[in-house]
Image (cartoon, rainbow, N blue to C red; front, side):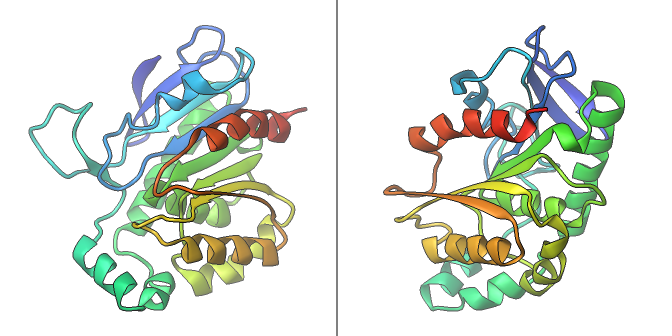
Length: 241
């Protein structure tokens, strides 16, 4: 496992024959959620039952929410979220408004991920067709946005506890990804991003022709063992050649 810079993002690489992201095997890219440190999801790769050629990339979001804290522990964000407003809108039934909005900072975050993906293909033998793109929470929303807006298609997508944003735009874009496989999970008791938002994302993608595998679980805002156990097989199934 090693840390490098790809484009403008710090990224932890793991897996592959050298355990440092080397080789030319398939790659799972996972983006962490709002307020989590950049290495928040790194431990997942140790739990996946995959061959040694499978590689992993864990990018750190560009916004540091606690400057001065050690980089491995500093909370980060892909774009800023007004948490108080989010909680208030969800509590008062205004979630519809949030789903329609394009968050300020999303464009910059997406462009940073585009740059990382270009570097992965150029320098690490990871073209989109061999990449499963995913994330958790805010990272899942960003992964979905990149999936729909990138000029090329990916092997698959993993959307963990995400929700709909940019709904009108995503609805216009989704059909160009018809046939792409998606593994989506959501907790029925999620207090951060309600279950209904995950269902709405599932329905949007399914209506556009993506093949969505829906994993609901009885917990909250997290990634349970049942999802981790399925994730390894999903990566292998979507990247098999």
